Length: 270
Figure 1 (tube, helix red, strand yellow):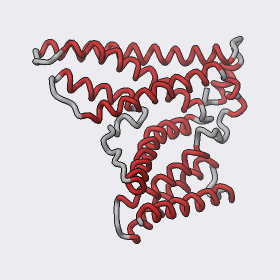
Figure 2 (cartoon, helix red, strand yellow):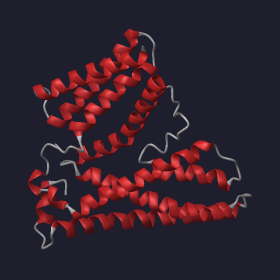
Figure 3 (tube, rainbow, N blue to C red):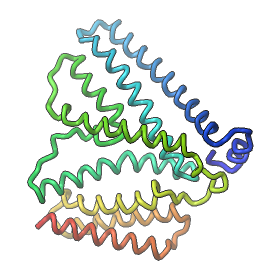
Figure 4 (tube, rainbow, N blue to C red):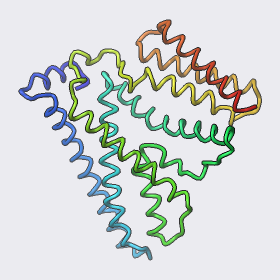
């Protein structure tokens, strides 16, 4: 549905948008689940054949937790991808949504430590990212299967996994039951969703500007790093607006976000 020809074809079918998007979603979900089941069973059989001394009973809850994680992560990504009007924009959105939650958590950890002297570093970094719905249960049950003890941060991090479950279910329902936002005439046009560049770029630039102080105590090095990420953000706006001369509004957002990030970084470093 990201090409003009594809949009013209599928939107001309005698199906309402809700049913059309549901069919596409279910088709992809079935393919993902089928592949997962085959790979999981083959992996399990390989472990059994090799005769490793493991607590194999934990493979049962792991199977279902990973099944939920794979399904919901697919749902989350489909929603994010649907907010783009071009395939390349959808791919970029998915990548940014993998990285940005981690950056926001690092920002939260820095503010908590500097202002409130609260150490939140005991949390699993896997869990704060949407990919944690898959990787975190795998890491947790790997310790149980191998009969090893686990740290308390595993217990503390399950809340993030539940949060991603809720978010994924919510955005999936929003995508499937309120499909009016998907308009065929917008295909191949600028991806101007609030879930896309217009929010992701400033957030990315702000979090990086604040947290970069952890990489160097030298102001010169810090400013070079800030300029580097400012340039990356500018390239993001070039991709967003599809022109090298970005709008005055976007330029103001870049400069304001950078200055605000430097100000917050300075306050936290005092």
